[in-house]
Length: 51
Image 1: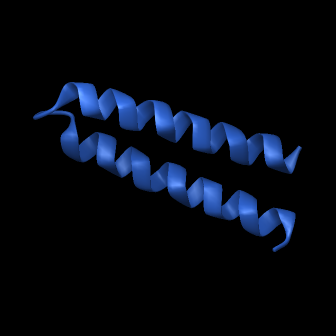
Image 2 (image 1 turned 120 degrees about the vertical axis):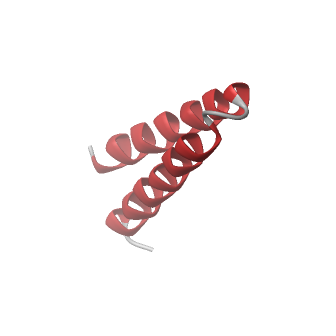
Image 3 (image 1 turned 90 degrees about the vertical axis):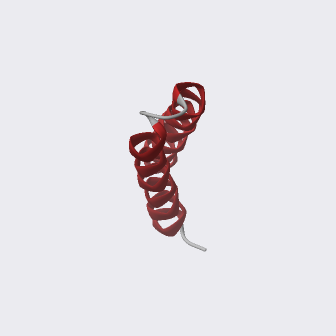
């Protein structure tokens, strides 16, 4: 796998987790925060991977 492919997959994972944050925010705020932290880590990892 090339470096750009891994970065795109990490960005996709971050987007998926952000969708989970949006879906769970009203019902289970703790899980939404955990998903948000995961999203930030995935997007940060993608940015670091490209650098």
